[in-house]
Amino acid sequence: MKVIDFKDVTVEEIKEPGSNGVTVRWLISEKDGAPNFAMRLFEVEPGGEVEPGGFTPNHKHSWEHEVFILQGRGILVAEDKNFPLKKDDAVFVPPDEKHQFKNDSNEKFTFICVVPIEKQS
Image 1 (cartoon, rainbow, N blue to C red):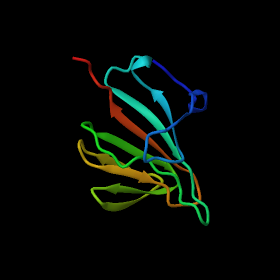
Image 2: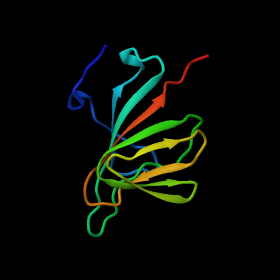
Image 3: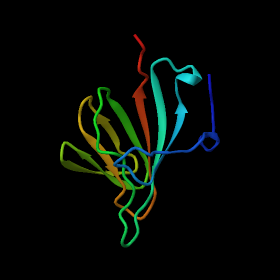
Image 4: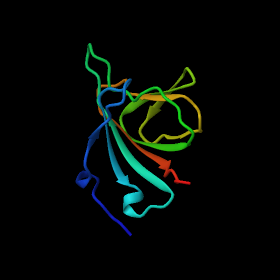
């Protein structure tokens, strides 16, 4: 069993090409004894009057993930379609679907993302 305050988890800047203004906290992962899933907290910086808000890379991968929006508003770009997102929305991103999260507001865009832990064969 593990109970934590998210503020006690190290903040890591996402430095992948094609991303900007995004941080992640690995709240629960394999190192905590979780055998199947990892839970991450993403924070995407707001934009200003001139500058756009933060965004994750536009990418795809072989695993699904589930997302729950905690705060703010944003856009999910998936297969070249825009899906507006707001607090309390839940999202399923299937495997191999190209996707990107963007903050299009003037407040922080925060969400939980759950992904499977990769098994080593």
